[in-house]
Length: 206
Ligand SMILES: O=C(O)[C@H](O)COP(=O)(O)O
Image 1: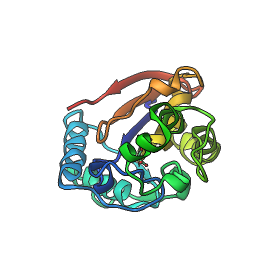
Image 2: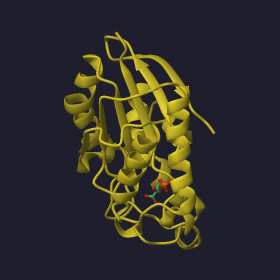
Image 3: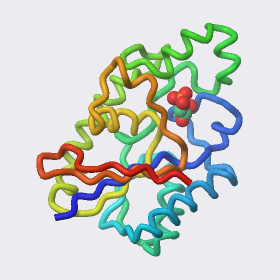
């Protein structure tokens, strides 16, 4: 039985382009982001992949990416479940600040810790651990059971909500997760074993 799980980070957003911390703020895709999402769909189509269900967050950039992918693979009406559990990490007080300005103010190292450490939260926001504490229960109760019963599942979400998931799938640790980056619009094609561990992973780079 095929147990297919495809994860994709949304295409470039307006605030990615402007280099602003975004979190739960809700900018849409840029033109480049639209191209990235469309091209992600084309790459999935080239592999002949189709889906039974899609999951996305309640944020526009992820939903727009999901729609563009579904349009590209010829499944524009695929049922899609939107849930806040898949939202980007809440960046708290950093939301809306320029990332270079933040480095100038708090130092390169502190900003890197807020962005990439496992358990140190930015002021007023979520650490990756906090993000994982909402993403993983959602994955285990809503997404994984479908994959294990053979439904082909697409998840269009965010850099850090997907890092929380990839951390578990790829067996990364709090020590190794900081160097893991997810590019915008690059699908990760996982096939799972019956015990829910990873059988194979393919990264569909452009
Ligand atoms: O919320 C954001 O600013 C981005 O989507 C992810 O940002 P990061 O790469 O700083 O975690």
